[in-house]
Image 1 (cartoon, helix red, strand yellow):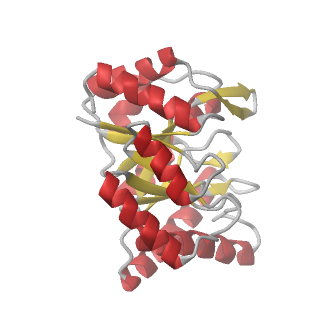
Image 2: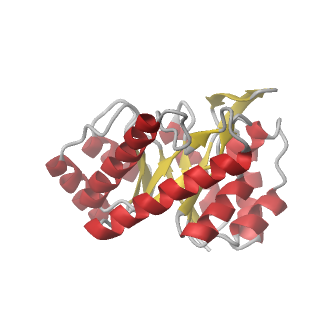
Length: 261
């Protein structure tokens, strides 16, 4: 098995500066954050991807945050799909493996109604991706609040029924479940999913779920990695703490000590 570690974002610098910093810390993954829109130009994405390949750094993208594939307003679903597909197109230019996104909110719909809408949107987007020959996989992310569509069980089912990937955010699962995470259960579910990537960080939560990402405690990283090792799960783990480079480097040092790199 192998764990790849890397940061979310460029830590206030540009894409190539972020890559250089990640490489200097011995990291082998990075997530490009298109938080407020896909604003990276094609030539920049191509240069970024070329350099990442030279450095052996695996790329993923986080699509813009305002996405709701189960909105009660049809135009918002159309806009959400466009944001994801724009991210996939730019991801293709840079050789990204995954495009991660938060899929939907339940709103006034039942969980099953929301699931059906998200599934239809995923199938439609995957058709467009195939038609264009784009290579990144779309990956629905486990979400941190019970009001959001995106429990691990829902996303595992979605992956098995559509072929999309899953981004398992272990911190989100913990926050969604009021601080409780059964790693054996989570890892058993992950073994049923063909394509996975991951997020991790420290997290604060309330009864309503996720509140804030916080710095990552070394003991929590060791706990996570021990279960991934136990279940023989290889994956990328992108750190999303407020200090993503520092904490991703901590992840890497622990993974090296555990001989899972």
